[in-house]
Image (tube, one colour):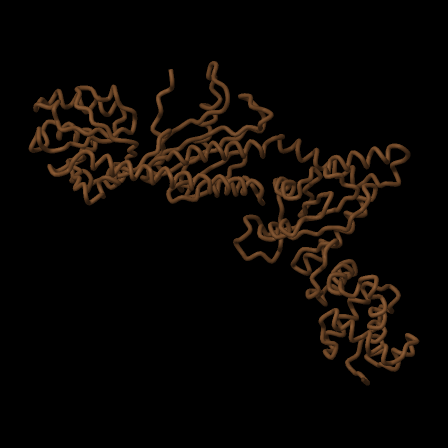
Length: 562
């Protein structure tokens, strides 16, 4: 036998869809107008009653042939004014999950039988009256159009939500972002409990007792279920500050450990007022599966393995690996990085301290251990660790422009070293550390492998020699090519000689006009105004940071005898 579909398995629209359609001229007579005016919650519940289809059945017990959510349309052939009969009829409709009764006046009855009206009002059961000109076909047509529109809207909404949930898992603080994405609709909220940590998103009801709520979910989800296997949802209803919520919860366990008492199991819940939708339950299941991926390994074990591997890679310098072990080590690292990698880059990710207030969900500059999942997925590497306020990684190839852009959009700055042999990974990480310090000064990415931005070398960097070297290399990049050594040397001498062409020519052993030509070429390459004393000072400071042969105390002047 096939299981009976539940209301949440079907597309539905609220009863208000029919009540608000002017062409139907439908009138709600139960609950009574006085009851609806006195109780706004009752009025909201009636209007939001979900309807999945319509059916005409003039039998004593139509519920035998109906599914939950089927709207019943009758002309009243079964009614003869017997109060006991009508009360039993309404009770059977309630038991069958019929959302409402639509009564068409004429040709059988000129008005609603008083006994039926009284039975419906006593139970607050929705009773809708259609005037004589309206055919049931009009109700069915209106309902079918609304249901088709809802199915299309639900599919589009679910596709968008699925994409947003998946993106959330790959971002900074994935658990928090997941619950925020899960509950973006008005009146909805989400809560995720992982161990002792609770993450909340959406319009969570103030005053809700989440400790007791999750204790109840935990007990019900862990009850033995005979031969049934796999995680399932449990449901409850709560009232907080006079607002009714339907709540569903789903277990979220690591894929590698689906046992009832598995460590690392989490519980994800969604709530909505006044009731949940089919999309809510579909999204809940998808989100629970994504949480299971986050919990693939127990958090402590995963962090320990990451820390251990990175520690071995950075502390075991190439000089300590001898003989055939060197080749084996390189092969293992290359296989782990994939793509036939022969060298590696060190990458350091830091939070951008210049993010606008409120854009980052954690204190400025801070990182958390779960951020390693985001960086691992962005860079496609197994070698990632969280240390202090940094994320550190090794990759086989530097990030692409798109990956740099994605990191920037999420509030991260990346510092990437130049390629190094696998036996020189500690050196690569030291270089990335210097680049990271420069990235904080510059407020942007520092990629040791790309054409750098030549517009952002700050005078403040001169206070830190390591930062100054990296920042100056970014700023002077057009002059650092091997075929530009002559221009770089001429510019350095000219700046040290306070802009004197004659002294520079004697210092270089060149003709005065040659010096002019080389300096002009340098100016064009850098795109700087050498008539500006401040620009000359900045260029000389940058050159000094890169060239140890320059006298560290040299100070450019503002005069010139050109």
